[in-house]
Amino acid sequence: MHGQRLFALMISLGVSFYLPVSATESGAQESLPNIVLIVSDDQGYADMGVSGLAPDVQTPSLDALASQGTRFTQAYVTSPICSTSRLGLMTGTYTQRTGGYFYGEEGAISPKLETMAEMLKKQGYRTGYVGKYHYGYHDSQSRDFPLNHGFDRFYGTAGVGRKHYLIHDDAQHQAFLDKIHRYQRKGQNLEMTSMWDDRKKVTPQGFATEIFGEKAREFVRENQDKPFFLQLAFTAVHNFTHQLPAEYLKAHGLDAVKDWDPAKEDYYQWYQKGRYPNNPQGRAYYLAHLDYMDKEVGKLMQQLDDLKLRDNTLVIFLSDNGGSTPIYANNGPLRGSKYLLYEGGIRVPFLVSWPARLPKGVVLDNVISSMDVLPTLAAITGANTPPYVDGQNILPLLSGEKPDLGHDILVWDTGIGTAVRYGRWKLKTASDDWNAKYEMVEVELGMQLFDLHKDPGERTDVKDQNPEVFQQLQGIYLHWKNDMEKGLN
Image 1 (cartoon, one colour):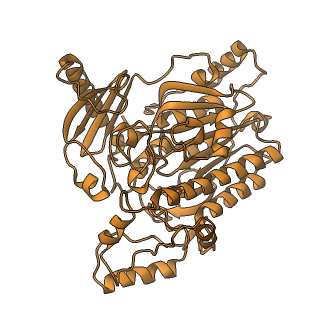
Image 2 (image 1 turned 90 degrees about the horizontal axis):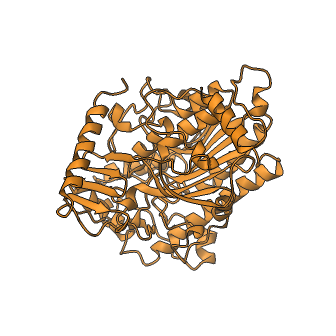
Image 3 (image 1 turned 90 degrees about the vertical axis):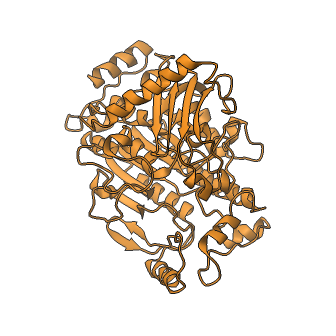
């Protein structure tokens, strides 16, 4: 059915014949586009030069990618934090269906869920994951490990949020843990762990962003003669942005900041020093990581050009959640940060480019979700979309066939907060501020209703002026919650 719809779409648009077929049919691999999904980490909504929202940002590679396709201004992820957001992207569904609300989920990928990689593998794709995956168990034998949910190749970090940018050595990591124990300190470690090269642990030398970029290009070179799906998940621009190559710090006149030393201070004392407004060079460190990532995106796009693959490669770029303002991300006009259900925590940069098939230089304000990626790829490749998927196929929107396509309703729930987007209206609740206080971000407790058309910065609560709308959105949330509790049925 998906293949028939896409065929009809292509004919209606007057483009060349293109019919998705399964990989078992003759000539199938020649008809399938390559797919590259690039995920940044905690990138600010305003932190892309083409948006024009932050004058200190230069991202020529991302800007070029935007010019080659579509940039969305109202794209959302399923969670204001990375683990549940990345899982929603990978499965195309609300993670609450399988119990994922905030941090702490284990065994995240239910065996009832088909991942994006598993879906594409059935269609004949060679699948590769490079970089950070951050959901579920760290164990290489668990389903959450990339090689166990559809990826043929994995190079990166397993189940780790705050991966060190410069140290990748289990021995150093263990020595650091021993030091924490010796001085009886409490707090998060700096994750100096080794990388995974498939199922082997390795200790590469170098800067993580550049390592991931190099491994992504290696995967493309090795699979250029067959359809491939590459997910490139950078750790940039996540904590801790002071971790930069020495030559960069010297060239840009930036101070070399030391990592947490358990022998000298408590973790949280050190942690606070690096976060807004306590770090006078914080924005410069953040922009350095953004610059490194942008360059790696550019190198990958250049390689696709050199190998004459770019025209028939679908490239999708997005951030895993909203920008983390404590590490000096800029969310522009949007209120809030990562960790929160304000727009600044869940609305993200989102680009889609496929030069051979889709229009270029388009900017759309349709409401879309990261959950839409999986069903859209299903439509493009002729795969079957699992019945529980909450996303929608946005290919007709991207092609211009259905310019009004988008989500009427989106819902979020972190266990300590909820949000409902319904058209112009947004209902936001917060029942606890423990995480906000720890992460040094501002949140307003209680329930507020915002008119995003008039007030995208969510500053004016209008529930008293719109009681019927307020009640309607509460009803939408309760209906959604009941649906989530049914699981995947």
